[in-house]
Length: 117
Image 1 (tube, helix red, strand yellow):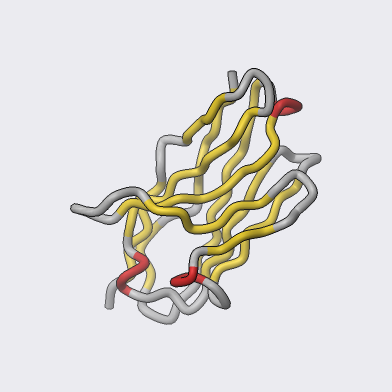
Image 2: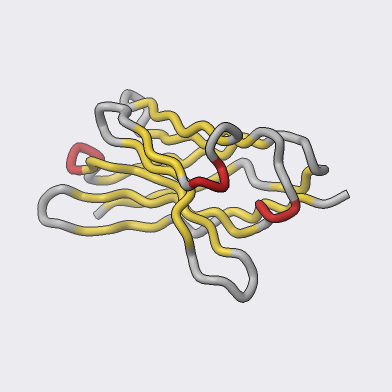
């Protein structure tokens, strides 16, 4: 089992920045890809960004150039630096981890990000 705990959400004005963190514990040696997803009210959960164990990254088009995902394998933590935030970035942000074997997907409890003036 893998446990994921997110932190760093909050309320920020448009154009502001936030940094989310997700700490993994448990069978961390089995984790390959990690990532961030988000779910706005009334919408489906969507991909924000992913990062492999080797730090190859992938971003959804709406966040390219504004968000940066990074990973510290020694601390079993993945980060999401969010800059130039927009009201449409408002959502609950979820951390995700993919276990290699046996194949499994884990989710954090979510952290709220609100962008409003």
